[in-house]
Amino acid sequence: MKETNGLTGSRIPAITTLPTHKVQQANLYSPSTLSIHADDPLNILTDVAPPIHVSTTFRYTTDPSQLRPFRPDSRPDNPLFPHQETPSEHCYSRLTTHSTSRLEAILTSLLHNPCITYTSGLSALHAVLVHLCPKRVSIGGGYHGCKGVLALHVRMNNMQVLPLDCPAEDLQKGDLVLLETPINPTGIAVDIAHYAQKAHSRGAYLMVDSTFAPPPLQDPFVHGADIVMHSGTKYIGGHSDMLCGVISVRKELAFPDGEGGKEGWMSRMLEDREFLGSVMGGLEGWLGVRSVRTLELRVMRQSESAAYLVQTLNDVLHESAGEIDILNTEDCQAIRKVLAKVQHASLQVEDIKSGWLKKQMPNGPGPVFAISMKSGDLARHLPSKLYLFHHATSLGGVESLIEWRTMTDSTVGPDLLRVSTGIEDAKDLLKDLVQGFRALIEEFKL
Image 1 (tube, rainbow, N blue to C red):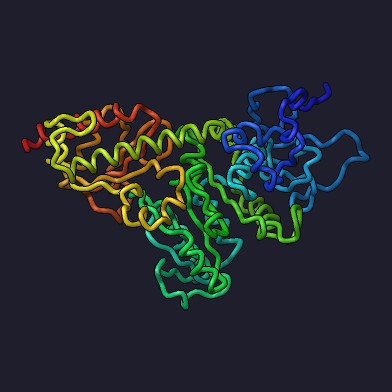
Image 2: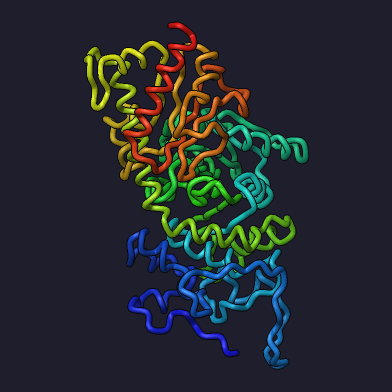
C-alpha cells in the first residue's frame, strides 16, 4: 500500500512547505496555530490525529539502490535538521521515532530554536553537562534534583559548583550558569538578562530552566539564554502521564555553519543521546504531541487562576477589609488565623515596577506558587482537608496539586506547601482552600 502525505488538501500552504525545523519561518503563525500544525510535514499518513507508533525498529527501503548507511548525525533528512525529504525514514527507536520527531518539530517552532527531547528533565540536564563538560557550574535555588545531577559530575570529573551570585571573576570561558526561573517551589522570578550579561562577560554560557514558565509565558532566548531546559513532564506533558525532558539550543550555537551544519551543538548532542540511551519512547512521544496541542490554552488558564488565588489570599493577609471578592468576613478571618505568607512572581512589586519582570513574562506569571502556614502541623494537615487539590508531588497537570513540600525536598521548612494550579474554575479552588482552612481551625481548636 502506497503511503500518502496527510497534508493533501491542506489550506495552510506555508506550513505544508515549511521544512521541519526551519525556525525562522515559525513567526508566520501564532503559538496556538503552530502547536497544531508545526508537525504537519511529518504526517506521512491520512490520519488527522497522530497515530501511536510503538515499534522499536523500522524496515529499510526495498529498493537496493536507495540503501545507504544510517548515521543520524550526517544524514540530511534527519528530523533534527531542516532538509527532511523523507520524514518516514527511521532506523531504530534509540535514534529517532515518528512520534518524538513530531514532538521535537512542534517544540522547535514554539521555542523558536532547535529542540531535542529526552527521557526526563534530569536526563536532559545530564546531556548538556556531558556535551559542555564545564569546569565550573554556577547555580542558585531551585529543584533539588538538578543539584543531584551536578553532584554526579562533581564525583566523576571534579567539576566545581559555585553559588549563583558568585563574583563574575570566578567564571571562565566554557563554564555554565544554570538559572531556574521561576524558582521551585515558590514561583518567584529572577532576572534572566542580568545573568546572561554576567555569564557572557566571562565567556560562559547561560542555561535557563524555564519549566515553571512554559510558552507562552516566557522566552529566555529573548533575554540572552544560550540553552533552555524544560522538564516536559510538567506543562508540556500537562496531564501527569508522561516523563519528558527538553533541551533547546540557540540556533547560532546549534547550527553555526547554517541550518543543517554538522559542526554545531545539535549534531553532537544528537549523537550523544544515542549513546546515553536517553531517547523518549514512542508512546511517550505520542503523549507529548497530544499534549502540546493544548499547551497555550492550558497554561494561560493555569496562569490566570494562580494569579487570582495568589492575589486574593495576599489581599486578605494584608488588608483589613471584612469582605474580599467572594470571601465573607468569616472566610477572611479563617485565612488570617492559619496562613502566614504567600510567595509568587506576581507579588514581586518592586521588580514589576522596575520593568524587567513584565518584560520577561509579558503574558502572565507562572502557575505555581507557595503558601506558608503558621505552623508545620497546619501545613502537614491541610492537604487532607482539601477536595479539589490532589496531595502529590510534581506539577503542571490539568488537575490542581498541593504538596507538603518537605515530603520530597529537605531544603524547605515544614510550614511550606507548594501549589500547582490546574484548569479547574479558580473560584472553586479558592472556596476549597478556604473550607480547608476552616477545617484546620476546627481540628486544632484555634
